[in-house]
Image (tube, rainbow, N blue to C red; front, side, top):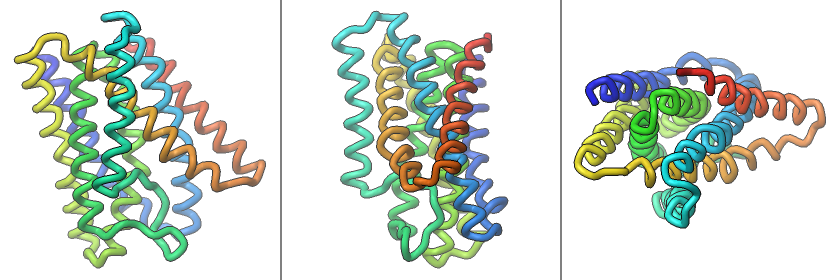
Length: 249
């Protein structure tokens, strides 16, 4: 169990460090940033779908079969994500804020981001509890998703009146809630048996919701054939990375 704690903590700290990436890309022009983020979103969507269908669900089915309970947990992850967006009014958005593309106020974004990162920590911990290879693959999927997400969050905070230093600090502090989420999941798993049979399909449901409800619609805003082809290529690369990670372990 000590080894699992080490893997999980290392992974959530790495994911939290992604919150600092905003300062790297944000100085670019709005048009350049938008184009880069669209490709990152394409890659992220492929990685999330890939991890859900190639790693998380097969691992869950391998443990207990495709049962009604597994299906309910899967749907539960989707419903939970829907509720987070409906009632906290925060969604996964990855494009720069502007008059044409407004974001929620900075404080609401911080609250939503903290909840989102806490859930990421739970998902990463649950994945490592299933197996180290699944944990590594899920960590990569989360990192790929967090890069465009954190750039967007950094922009929201600047737009909301934060200084660059304060925006970076607050983004990093909310990212650290992933550590709390991971610790909570590991603690519960030590008290309750067979938690992975619930958490893995639940995590898959969350990834499917994010990729299908939030990321794919953003990609459909681009209708030019050439750009769409590049989006498809990056999407397939994201899936391909998840397939390659099957070789880990």
